[in-house]
Each structure stands twice: as structure tokens, then as C-alpha cells.
Length: 123
Image (cartoon, rainbow, N blue to C red; front, side, top):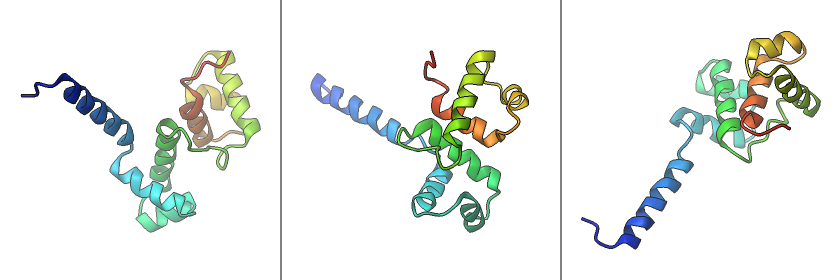
């Protein structure tokens, strides 16, 4: 039984901090380590014997959970802005509806932009 409230509060704080640091899946952490070594998603898929779509899912996971992860290498800034503007103007984050309106964007690009900026107010 913990009798000291300050000790309990400190433990609670540390546990919450650990939860934030542990938002990536085990598999995506392996991908992250290879990515920061300079490997392309295609090379990572080959090295890990995974489908490229799995590595792309990891990229979306990084965009969603890692504040400093840049989607710029995967999505041109102009396309990012178009996706954000389109999503806002038609009032949806549905991939197919955005893709139908913006044929130049890939589904991965749309997913990355929505993961990175989807919870932010765009007004």
C-alpha cells in the first residue's frame, strides 16, 4: 500500500509518460529504426520481408503519433494543402471522396496528410 501521496502521484506521472512513449507497435518500431538509418520504404519492405503496404501503414502510424515525423518526403507541400483544403471544403476525411476529387494524390498521401493534420483545426 502506498501511503505517501506525492510518491503515488510521481508513479502515476511516470506511467503516463511511458504510455506516451510506447504508442508505436513493435513492428513499426523496427521499421522506424530502419527508416532513420536512411532506408526507403521499399528497401525496408524488402529487408523485413513485408509488403510495402505494411510499411506504408507504419508511415501513417508515425504521422499520427510522432510529432516530429515529417510527411514532406512523401507528400509535396502543395498536395498537402490541397488535401487539407478539400477535406475541409467537402467536410469529410473519407479517403475515397477526397481521392475522387483529387486524382493526383495517392491514397497513401491522403492518409499521411489526414493522420498528420486531421485533428487540427484548419479554420
